[in-house]
Image 1: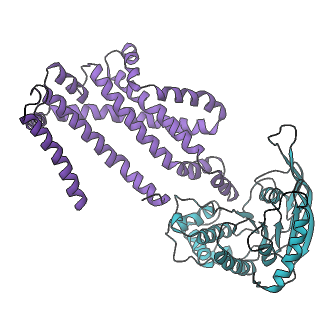
Image 2: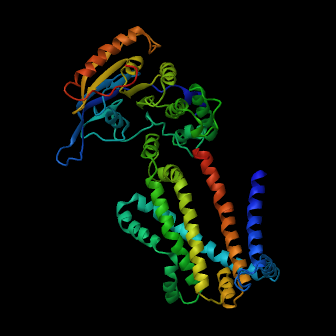
Length: 254
Length: 275
């Protein structure tokens, strides 16, 4: 547990520095609230249900868009890796669109879908889809050809080879792509929520936005902590088990 | 199908390679490389034949054509009289890299080839896999992951995987080239033993002269550019053969000098260790 101790000391130290800076009145308390006022805001938001309902709204949007992006992106990535013509067309398009910062989809989504859940969904999907396509395609292309050849000599053909050999062999890349897709989806959703006011659901991005409007710095910082925690938890819960599994199987663990 | 029947040896096949030629497009557009030029070879039932030659002599290409992984431009291969057009379970292949699947454990790797073989239920498949893992001496490693195995153990698993569907022919493409000398010597012994027990026709590709002499009933020497059969040596040494024996070295010396013959004027031919 020595490791845990060091981690606790590190973060406690950060909080202490923050509190000392506040006590020294280096900046106006409007700009830098104390850790306690941030804590108080979070406690109040948690007890009156604002936080929980905003989290539900945000995570629902994220899960829907992300799941859709995966469901469409994985097969498309397999197809671009399989057919050169799709690689030259769809693959090139995905490469270009993946490089586009996903916040750039927000104005377009607003004009197309108005201030609706549809706009949110669209932005998250655009953030996820392209990087998943590219990671899957890249993963498949990195599968050593010897695997497919060996499988062929054992009587594996067509779909069997794809499902039982190519796909599992590409798994480390695909999980990397899913992780990147998640990061993009999360960023684009926050951009959309801060930008777009819609009445169908009040997400964490909105809380952040209104914190600014109200000049409520403790709210801004408090929500940022919540976002940070969600990002960390997603990594630990969604991706770490997969990565541990892959490291164990492929022998890439340190 | 009951298990004892499944484990009975299939009769080994007779291979007939008839005037096989194969060209590859080279980087210099107008000059294709002639990998194989009119190669004919008969391999008897249960024979152990080694294809020996420097790199570029087309020996791996020939093996791939026998496996059905590649097609000849002209000529063809018959296995027990039937034309080879695609890979088949009667001809299993082993590669230089083990080509084991890292996402499966040892047992599942062996089961991979068995799952593709019709007529066996799950418990029979398992029994067959267990039998072959024991045959190659890995009965204690069923649930090891591929990366946990040494190079020699990986090739043992690959051998078990190739033997499991009970093929008539075993095609081996420099399977021991990447192993250290000690491990290799052990595998020479084991392979001879398994070949005797399981009665397979084996075509074994190598660039190591001693290895070829140690294993083969016949050693077929191929010359490069274009790939042709240069000479054939029948090895009449008693089995099991020891790679370090003097008799074996004598045979190897003769073949090595023949091999050096087509290096004249060019750069020295790469040959295996221990020559």
